[in-house]
Length: 278
Image (cartoon, rainbow, N blue to C red):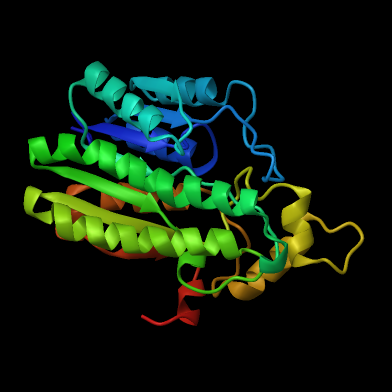
């Protein structure tokens, strides 16, 4: 029997990047999967947030590994859309065992150049979106008296980060929210944790603005020049790494092996966590 046989997993931001890898990883272990993602480009965000058929591609990949997948277009900034997504998943699969509150955005800007729009879009997606997902899914888990919730924070939730004030504030907030939810939901057998990745090879960092943030001195910085800086920050001799490593951490946190782990933030940073307090 697979590790997650009979379980149902909900993933926000499941159309691409880490969310897509999460969906495939949990499906391989027997979970039925419900994913949501946005189909709108924020004016404040520099990279392409959505590509045609992102959700459909994730559905196909989940089905390829032998599981079922429900896909819904959702803007996690809107609590009613998130609630409708959770209800649709419950109606389709009958229960909710796992929530990966993963949807997130970022765009580099100095604090003095951060617009009201960028601040609001970042906080509303990365922090309020996590809150909306937890609030919508938790009552179903309370009724079952079981559940696993994992929110995506970041290395930026552990330290100050130049050019990423809004993103850093949102990801610090996620950790505080996770710890509070763990306290409130523990009596119902619900585990709540966060994952803090460092530099993950996804569409969010595969664009020119990311490269320029690392090497503003170069006329045409590339992914290779960015990874030179990343390797200096990582303890292990690697640059940005595949999302599968984050999905492996997620799988652990939602497995029976992590039954007594709650209220914590798991660093998956190739050793960057040596740079901040325990």
